[in-house]
Amino acid sequence: MIKPATFDFINQVSKNNNREWFAEHKADYEAARANVLAFIEVLIPILASIDTAFPKDTQAKSCLLRIYRDVRFSKDKSPYKTNFGIFFAVHGKTGAEPGYYINLAPGNCFFAAGYWMPDAASLKNIREEIDYNSEEFLKIIEAKGFKELFEISREDTLKNAPKGYPLDHPLIDILKLKSFNGILHFPDQAFLKPTIVDKLKTAFESIYPFILFLRTAVEH
Image (cartoon, rainbow, N blue to C red):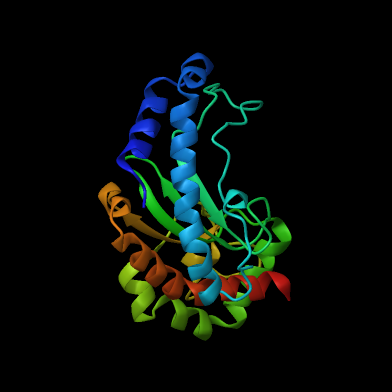
């Protein structure tokens, strides 16, 4: 499970986000990173048993996002992220595809799954699939397991209806989305307990039909 020291390290990074401090505490970073990698190793076979397209021989390090920020085009020049991000996807963490994400940050721990900011072609395909198969899509997001755990993120959405869809479309709020993600928030303490594994297994199972729908949309 995630150790308190791992969260403590992330807290310290947010207070000391500079290269000098990080270099002095490189051993703490390596310990926290090792803890997260061990956690990922527990989850990989669980996810692979649910989503059979996900390779069961996936390496943990291929799912852990870098802590180093790309500051080339950002006004914020802080060199380090203040979280550990984990992304599970069929083609690895750099693939543009539907996947599963875990965010580990004090006060902002969550599980999310779906497709974040798909390219124009994939976005068009997803909207068409939702439009053509509205009944199937509604069955997925209104299933008991989904509704009890997840909320659809409304973070990325158009102000107006996308081209080709009327404003009175019964799923217009979904079609206006630019990202399609189910979000499940956790208290920090949940990740400190062994029960988090079962909770994430249930989350994987409940969100899998949603992932499969998106995957089918972009791959057809």
